[in-house]
Length: 439
Ligand code: GLU
Image (cartoon, rainbow, N blue to C red):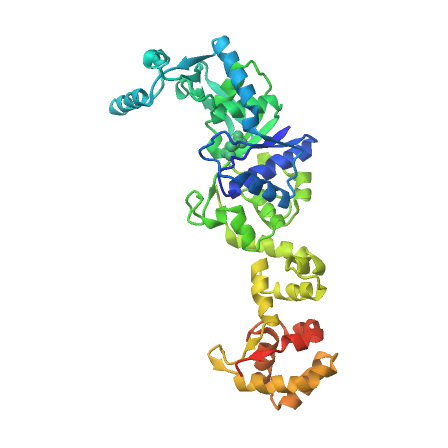
């Protein structure tokens, strides 16, 4: 079984979505189940509703799960397993207070040494009446594991001390809950962010202590850098999946882009289904990757172009296929749904002809043409050439003045795609489109 294990602590980051996509693909490639495990153990950091948002995003991206669990539902198992470790001597109670540990930390800093917990401290404060935490006994052996992206990773025994697996309130720590659940659900491979690289040896230690021998495959994805070259933080808006969707990027394009980041893919533009056929974790570069919004725009444009007219129309909340045709024309100059909306909505809004276009006043030409169009638009359908000839004649306009006025009346802009193409689509809607204000 593969799993994606988000914490319901806020807006979904693209790094998390990338991990979800990769785990999903591996599950499909291997014919294994895909589990979503909501890691809600850190009660103070949980944000109400964030789990639902994560599930909505996964659904929107087509990352459908076979099983869904909330980690807090497994607390009884975590407690049983911690008790088992106490019973077999692999874990022990520690009564140290925060103050005591802090003073030891300060001593280590003063001695210019790395702070490591010393097992002999466990019971020094036993009589204080404080509830103990449970710590897993440290390993005397080095821990080595193979990472599908980073290669062999080694951790010397002194890099890991006896770490807390159960807090004093009986709630498991992330590393313990995660390791127990990966064992309980028979997880075969784990793809997650690079920030977890140093958690993995701890989780392996938990498995060893529990006598669990299954070799799990690990892959830690390189961090995503913002356009500034620094780690992409929550403050970079493009790091939020919800923000990208709000900007009018398609899930299929975001997915395509996240799969191709720091990767060698056989095609530039592909669907999630297609990627299942050839995706390989081994091809992912070890180096951090920089988020490139211009590249995402390019990919999004390609995905929009692949859609049928009726799908384009639906995405623009219209059931009229001509809206899709219009969108296709405007793909000449737009790469996101929002940009398409920004181009298309002025077409169906009243045109303020008193506005200056490129610093020039076309109000007189527009007014003359609007009046002329009232006399001929009823004779539609006319082909563009005859429409244009008649409109020129009726308005007495010609050349630049005529064409600018026509474009402004049709689109609300003085620049844009070929007028004959636009006219062909707008012809049945001329009455709605040619509505002016400000004359
Ligand atoms: N809840 C952890 C996170 O969101 C899970 C990491 C993991 O996949 O183990 O970072």
